[in-house]
Amino acid sequence: MDSKIRQILSQITALEDELRTALHDRETPLFYQIKGQRIEFTAAIRKAHRQMRTGLFRWIAAISLRNLLAAPVIYSMIFPFVFLDIGITVYQAICFPIYRIGKIRRADYIGIDRHHLRYLNFIERFNCNYCAYANGVLAYAVEIAARTEQYFCPIKHARKILGSHDRYARFLEYGDAAQYQARLEEFRRALQDEKQR
Image (spheres, helix red, strand yellow):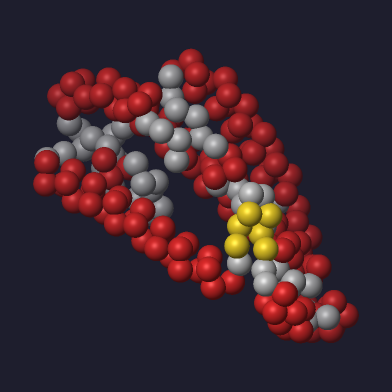
């Protein structure tokens, strides 16, 4: 990968970090404050949230048949998500120290906090937390797999793939054997030096 591409990727990463921070800074003072593990709303916001909540019986009466029929399939996915969560956590705990790969904080990927939103009824809060857990586990697993791929095989694919992780753009070009031999240890050392993110 040439230096111009590396420079552009570094700028993109810096801009993404800056955007994430700016978005978070913008929303936090408007609606809530985080104090340790607690999320606090002002009394006026809490009151407004309660007034906007759809009552449980009215919500159930309005649920569509397709949503009702799909619910058992959706909720049955909890088993593979929990299995993946446990499996990937154990994998990281055993393998990352062996290869000196920086560990990933699970809590940075799985945020269960939507139960604080009083404008959602009990079922809506449960659904929101279920989705947050499922997507968090998948993001957590992707980062663990991405670090593993960087350690063992930091090579791009011949064909363009969708949904690649953010490390992929920095991988070696497909078919570049000389760079693979020359730079594999560099990719591995970068994992050792990397701070948790």
